[in-house]
Image (cartoon, rainbow, N blue to C red; front, side, top):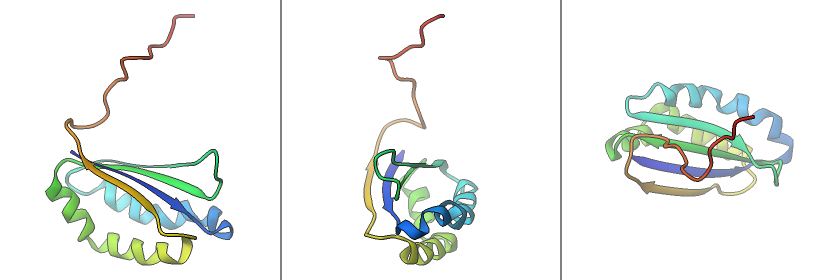
Length: 109
């Protein structure tokens, strides 16, 4: 599985526009064969920073994603909204998706 984490620091004036702007990209990516997940969050420390966690079943699925029309359109759009070059981690890991964390289990109440 290809696991990717990207930090996008957006221009302060574009913060409220970011998620609506990337929604078509998000929806199209989630429909791609081989997409495992594509999830947005935001930083609690920096209100202008959004974090994207994404995974693809194989290197081929990840390569197809980068070659898609919606990827190209999103990269063009994002260039107008970001305040700096995004930071990325892109690694191949074993597995097919999220696993349960062994160190924390909910206590009964």
